Length: 244
Image 1 (cartoon, one colour):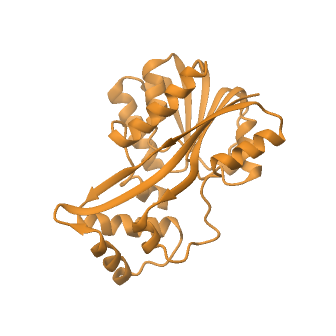
Image 2 (cartoon, rainbow, N blue to C red):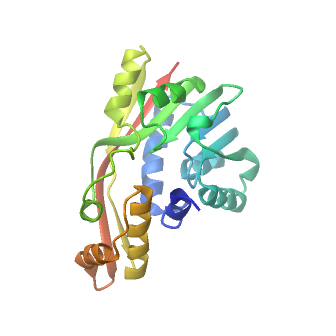
């Protein structure tokens, strides 16, 4: 089981109130901007597929969801079946670096996808679409005191998705027109001490860092309250729509 399979145990599913709020904000901007969700859609780093499920529920589409975590994709498939949209979504387990589709797509989506972590991979993502691209990423900030204390020395070899402003620079360099919206995206997770310990270990595994049980316990203790461990994240997200 890889780190992302472990992450699936802590990842939001369809119906999670905070994630649904952010997905609805992003999709509302798409609809307001004239995006019509039709035809063939590819979602890179689909995860548990919240955005795919929401699109499939409201549109006649054929979605290909790519992710390297089998556990994430199992959650997506189970939710798709439960919601009655399983015939609209095909899942592929794979690494974006090795993904070589034989055709282009009407719409390409990447939402907080760590595979889009370089100019090279941004170009590859942009080239997936024959029409519209939708890129959702962090904006100017993402703050989480719990993770800051947990991850004292970040691994420079582990990169997240390129930020919204960086994607704008790439699109400008390619003379590709785009629209964008920034929005506030704060959330708080409240979990048991045992689950918080496991979450911390998973995050360290994801960052390919050593797991120090004593360090984890001391960090978790700082955020313990009467009803559980509170982990607050304050962030800005950006949704960018471009046409090729």
